[in-house]
Image 1 (cartoon, rainbow, N blue to C red):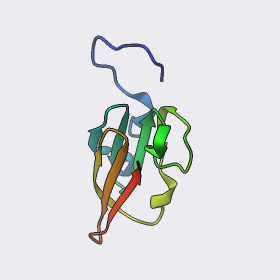
Image 2: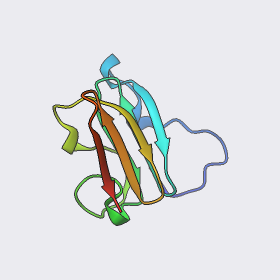
Image 3: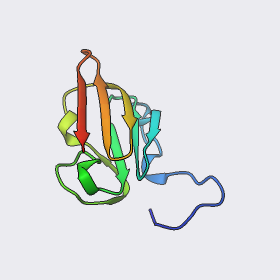
Length: 100
């Protein structure tokens, strides 16, 4: 990853599926961060980490997608990234929020 403007679509190699359960099935973009769900129900985030919007328990920015470990053992079925917070819905119908 880098911080350069991309004038043409560019494949995100860090999310290239190495197995069918790691295939990306949904994405959401906020003001300064992005989220992806893989077929195994994992959530990945990257971008500006201020306000805890990435869900990694810190304020660190991530240039490359990083799995949100807080969802280990759960299957996420939907995500939404907003300006400085994010939401997820798990398979059991619970709604999760993080950031500010």
